Image 1 (cartoon, rainbow, N blue to C red):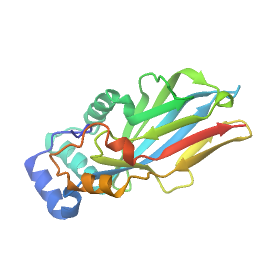
Image 2 (cartoon, rainbow, N blue to C red):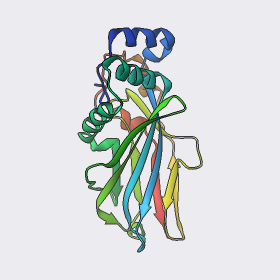
Image 3 (cartoon, rainbow, N blue to C red):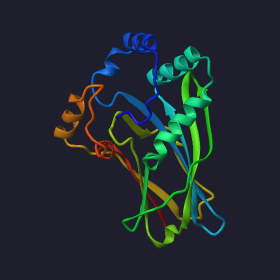
Image 4 (cartoon, rainbow, N blue to C red):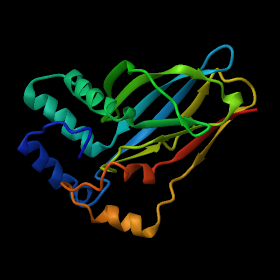
Length: 211
């Protein structure tokens, strides 16, 4: 299932498919550049993360045209996206000492257009702030079915440790799916699903460590 699904008009889908034929042939079908700002408190704990997602041109055209066809602005689209991803940890999994970290509901959500691409931003509070001095904080960002590929943007600001104490740093480990898994994902059509555990196998793993 496409967890970011928004119902588009047949005309819009046809028009975009003609422009971006290759994008509809195999998983992933769409791409999201991820930015993550990890927010530290004055005493050095991680209190939340502000995420910014920049959608690919193909999906952005669908969203913008759908808003135009229905005579609405982008706000209802944002509300639908946020409602859908809330059911799946907002596509973010955080662990410390192999324990899953609980997050609160998204705050300060907004949507806009940047260089012809749809951008959404939201903050996720961590219910019990994390002390990274007590163990590495590890996170992954992934759309469960791998309909969307989510990778950190190739930008020096893609991961920010805001107000982190000296000695804090991060390490990004790229995904390492084997050839069989890549071939399986490539075999899936636009209406097929590889299950809710496929996306995480194509996700980056980021470790935040504070000495």
